[in-house]
Image 1 (tube, rainbow, N blue to C red):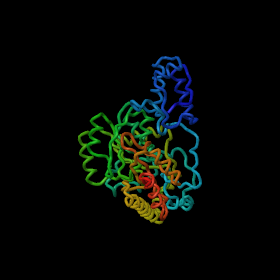
Image 2 (cartoon, rainbow, N blue to C red; image 1 turned 180 degrees about the vertical axis):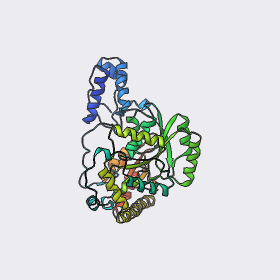
Image 3 (cartoon, one colour; image 1 turned 180 degrees about the horizontal axis):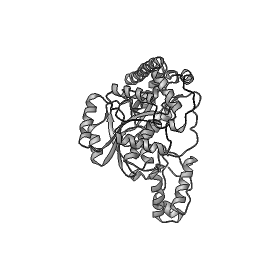
Image 4 (spheres, rainbow, N blue to C red; image 1 turned 90 degrees about the vertical axis):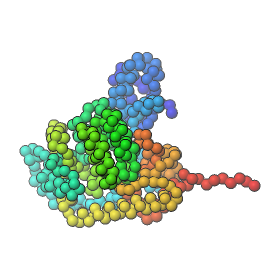
Length: 417
């Protein structure tokens, strides 16, 4: 693949700005390779050290990634605003984005109408709503999660970022699931952290993989206890016990459990998460929050309190869980019936190993189904595609499986007599 955009600049900062502009304008696409350091230096008539400094600055910010012998390329999701994602053709069903089913999300009208409408001033807005912390503490305690220190952050990834910044510095190593959630991988890149991939199976990270990553110097690890994105993996008691034994040999490791599944039930727009942790970490997170955002909106916190306290919403949660389970199992059954291996113990996604991601995604799109290619979720794990089952209707699992089967095992040609 040839880079079409002409990179300009005589200094490291100018070269970096030129590349960032190209990424922002999508003239350098996701995954696009960049010239080698020596080739670009010769073209721009600058020293290789100048180009190396520009590339290093962009890698540190997460815009570029180094692929070893594969060279340097644009990261899967660079931390810079780009143009809107192109819309799909009208005939294509979107099973790629990963959204929940809108029909299974609670409406906000009644909860909004019941909120306290009085204005609040700065003196009242420090910390979290005690009612929200009480509800969260009760739910955490039911799952044996310690509740000695709690805080409210602006979503799961906000909490992960703040926890990492409280303990790690650029250049530190972090163990991540492979395949894993793209946002965690992108966040690590944006923070300048070096990732140590941990292979996973349907029960989460393999203990030997976690041990290897920690022995290689990882100071932190991020684990998804259930509804892992993209594979649907979920820890069971045996795997959790095995991982605790590994961590016991590395007591200084920062462990972050990304239990994002709860937020899916309320909808993506409610950017709020309750974080439990050791008192030192929570104090650092709250302290940094006070310097910047200050607090999570009390209007938003009050809305979540009302939703979590509403018996009707709780019934909707149970119905949504049953619906997603049925749709996921229907997809797995349809694939298995056609001899296609797939995983998806929990959550809203099914992970399907394939030989050629790009080709499979393109041919499925031609057949009317948009799915996510696995490259952006992977580090060293094999190729695959992700199918989001959240909005599948009756019969669609069979149709998707038929289309995929025809792509993975096309009819053989017979010799003419």
